[in-house]
Image (cartoon, rainbow, N blue to C red; front, side):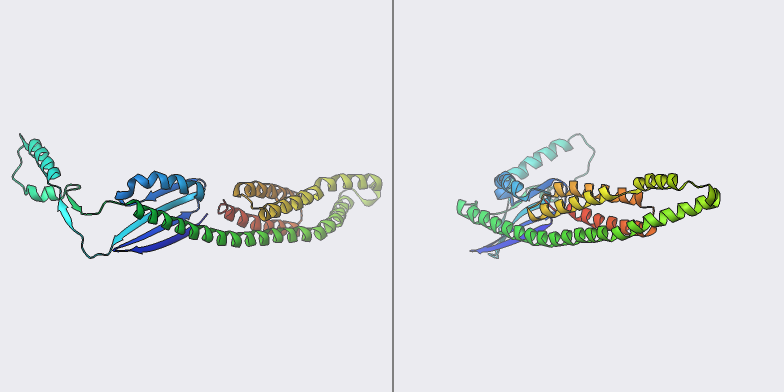
Amino acid sequence: MTGYGKAELQKETKKFSAEVRSLNSKGLDLSVRVPSVYRDKELELRSTYGELVVRGKSEVSIYIENNSGEKRMHLDTDLMNSYYNELTLWKEGKDLGSADILATLMRMPEVMKFDQAEPTEDEWNSIAELVKQAFAQFENYRQTEGAKLQKEFEMRIENILRLRADLIAPIEERKEKTRERIKAQLDELVGKERIDENRFEQELIYYLEKLDVSEELQRLLSNCEMFNEELSGGAQGRKLGFISQEIGREVNTIGSKANDAMMQRMVVEMKDELEKIKEQINNVL
């Protein structure tokens, strides 16, 4: 589920900030970004907040900014000597001209370093508390988004139930329309005087039973009620997904049996509402 939280702390000459963010994803993809001096804390953060974030393409980031105005640097001469010896050895026996080896050495990794104080336990405790504050904001953001999603789901289900109720009238009208249509076709093809009315009524009932959607309408109602119950009881996205699939199965069956333009339009509207529900279910944990 989408979420974002940030917390900052100014302590002496350093400014600390922590961010927790997440984008929608089926599984948990958590990355942790920490300053190099706290690299040993990365596993601790990953373990703690991986369980709390649960799901999503997520990131926990810690930044430290030195506001003292002085950033002292030093050369790692031992490392430079090692690089120099390796380069000199590699150059032997090769037809290479004399290049500015100092410029090459200065571009080598870790040669130039910033002076930074060793981390203290007190400083890390402050950072850990800062991450907790950022995560609390992150959770509050997700709770707000979740409340909005719940209202949208309830509105979509209400629309589906309204369309279901609107289907009742055209279903009843379809019976008489079907009877008149078949009767007119038989009168034209066979002749009114040759039709056995009793046999005709029996065949008509058999035909209308194939088009009957009363069971599908009842199951659709039950599934929509189950969806709302799950929403009220702290639903999980996966379970809502299963229920929405059942709703879709009943809607599709009603559509296949509709055999009526007005009913087909209502079924299409129900499918549209259901598709919007499925789009948002991925946002639910």
